[in-house]
Length: 172
Image (cartoon, rainbow, N blue to C red; front, side):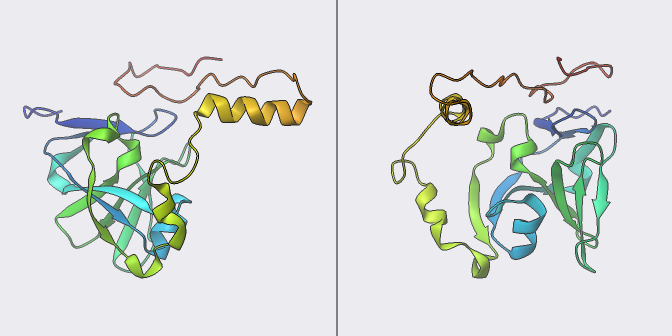
């Protein structure tokens, strides 16, 4: 791969595409409408890094040319958004959520604020009620099956947040 130390690593949900970052990235959030559509969310959380400091360690991402100037990388097997890059720039962004340790790259600035959704301010802890994934899934399962219904099977089939052997398969 390289003689340089890996600062961070990440990849897609299914494990078909993995990458390593060889420098510390700069986090940001983009609220533009293209990023909303590309991620299926209210914004894209991105980590800016020089293209020469990104090494694809397993597989290669597919790309969608979202504008004449830019491409968006994703896993062709599972659809995970992995990055954004201007074709003529020396840097790119990887999605913070695709990092194994997304907590290590906090956003430091906002872009595309003309499309920021007004309710995004409610994402601050303490503004709305908080619930764990298990609590929300159990509640929804109870609603679907009637009170006292069976719990949903929440075992993850996604790739773990660390490197694995090339023949890794999700649990059944």
